[in-house]
Length: 191
Ligand code: GRF
Image 1 (spheres, rainbow, N blue to C red):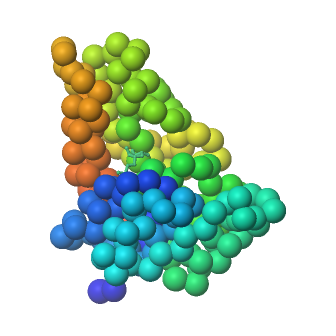
Image 2 (tube, rainbow, N blue to C red):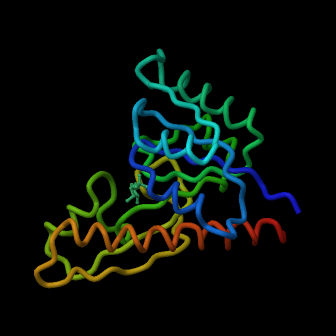
């Protein structure tokens, strides 16, 4: 059976993108990377995997609506049915959100609703909590506020460094995101 096509939206390193690409049994075919940061490492990763890239700088557009219209056209042209945000550092606006209702997932490095927004790992570390984690959720118009699908806890250990904590969180992300993608997409295929 042909797998549904998906796009990854990312702005940075792309370790989650890589985890999806190297997952042996991902339920989607990743056909497109959308990146809003020219020069980001994720672009090179996508090229290595032979995934089409659409790189654009929001500053080159008159408005967020114009920027999003271009992004939307690229995902529609690529036949994309699912969108996975992986370190995409901007809010998705109504143009894309309404076209892909309940078809856009995000991964966030905290146990939402705790520590939304930027630097979530740092926020948790500095807050002195003993547990943080990873959340995969549907997006809505808010900042890390959409319905939660799955969470996994990560302990903050005595004497932990921020680097060690980030490393453990990312390991969890790389397992959890493909797993959640698979369960959500399989459910949708069965429906
Ligand atoms: C991840 O920690 C993800 O949870 C957050 O941004 C980071 C992206 O990392 N939204 P990478 O670019 O996938 O390595």
